[in-house]
Image (cartoon, rainbow, N blue to C red; front, side, top):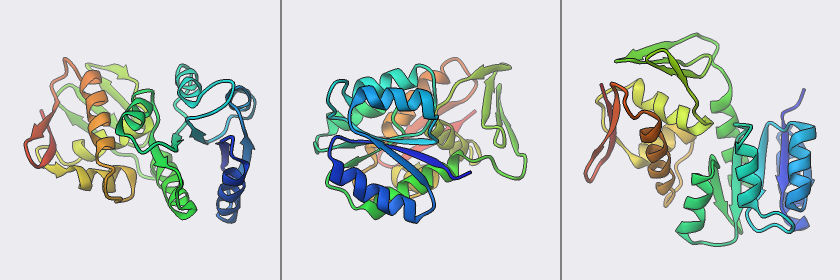
Amino acid sequence: MAIHILLVDDEIKITELARLYLENEGYRVSAVHDGERALHAFRTEAPNLIVLDLMLPLVDGYEVCRRIRATSDVPIIMLTARDETVDKIVGLELGADDYLTKPFNPRELVARVKAILRRAQPSQKTQRLTLGDMNLDLDRREVTIQQQPISLRTKEFDLLAVLAQNPRIVFTREKLLELAWGYDFAGETRTVDVHVAHLRKKLAGADVEIETVTGVGYKLVA
């Protein structure tokens, strides 16, 4: 069955252009144009990924994301017409996996969709890592600390997996963006910082921690 992508944007021209490019890649695509229909489609259609505009009628994208995240870790790419860092950070804090600023190149949207879905798929070979009291099952995409399961969103897991597979190795933000997100676009490194902040909260009290290397990036130590 084809992977299902839900497009949510009140600008019909944008959804039709995005639909064209995504369907050309073999995805099944549906589109809605307000927040209430987005929530209904999420509940009834169970999409594999959601492309979600922030500025929506009836229920805005922030609230749609918040409600979806209350019950699901489905990947979300947020769209915003605003080129302000605060809008992007708020979207990431609410649980979006990635964002694009409109107007965007539809080929870039396709690239980001592919990268997120590729990372979300389990690998064919089972791999398990143990660092201190933290265990990662890379196949099942599960993390436990002191044998207690830790809930991570898609990109949080991807980022932690990169760091855990290379303990004490310092990664630049750009390199983490490339390895965990699957692309390297200039100016997007704030995404990494926000996800590191999320991970630090969830790893609090564990034997491992993500250290900042000033002027360079991050490393995982145990």
